[in-house]
Image (cartoon, rainbow, N blue to C red; front, side):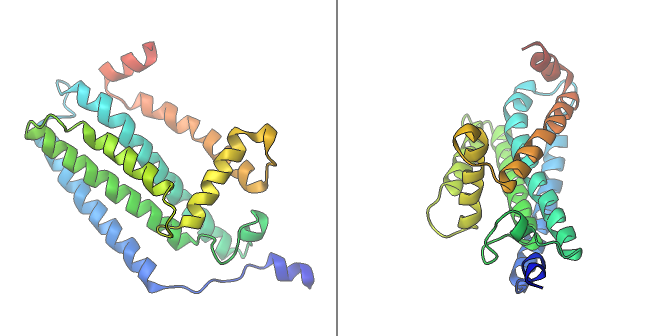
Length: 216
């Protein structure tokens, strides 16, 4: 009975605000993506005679954030299935129950990241079409903003989760000097599995950019 008390997950209180924000960011992402697709088609960015410099700068930066968003979405799917089968992942990964993510939190992170990424894509394309010389600063600004949010000491956007992520990455990179826990092993396994996705992105690149990547 004592073991079952720890193994059975404690169901956190659900809030409708997170569900509302997930729907809001998802709808905004879909709208912005349609706008970006129309602008890209009108500008001829992805045509065979399009601007390869755009793909060389924008593709690598924004595809990285898209991969992070995909990772958060799949982690949310895992959390949902674990909750459905009553698996106490907080006990397995040694997470604090009061600060651990739920599947709604993971979906909110995924939707907000993709909404920000597509908004930056639209802004970047608008600036390029307007002939602005600082259009290439948008991807760099997104990286700086993401790094600042990750290191932000204020209790906004899941501070405990962000700090836990940085601690796990530290344990993975310096594993001979730190104790490796189940959460560290799980994250390292997920990162290793994403190597296949990175190889697939090279296949989907334009021919000129693909030749440059494979020969470098």
